[in-house]
Length: 173
Image 1 (cartoon, rainbow, N blue to C red):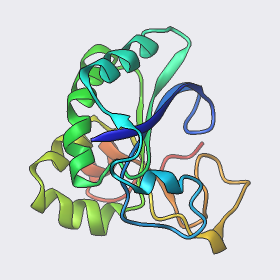
Image 2: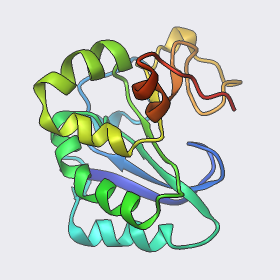
Image 3: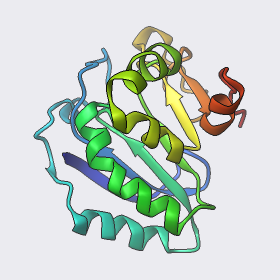
Image 4: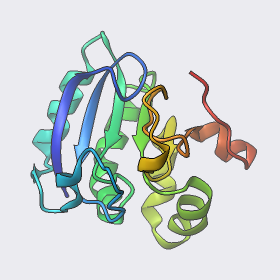
């Protein structure tokens, strides 16, 4: 897996100051995407143990509220595989720091309806997430007034609550 970059103090992709990891590789190719270079799975640098250590070091700072995963597409199969070692370490060391993930996939149809059945990594991946912002970016539904999402079709989902209740439970800012 490759990654495009790390923002060490991000306020745009979740509440509080966050560390944000931009992974490489996306098959959605949304019209109007703000990060087209990350569509290429080979873009950026290899995601290594040193990258994980860099992220963990930043998360140890008391002012950092949590970690956000963006892309590219974190839920592409190869990216789930590459991210799991990071997610395991983050949740073990920082269980109080929320983990957010942005995906162009639909939570019910794609993630629960297909990925969980097809890929053994998906269920474990979901177990570490606190929030999943789902849905492709739709340029015609772009709304700059939305908090932590780009278009009005996207949802901010509380993952543990949704899995427990068997229905989507939205997070309200």
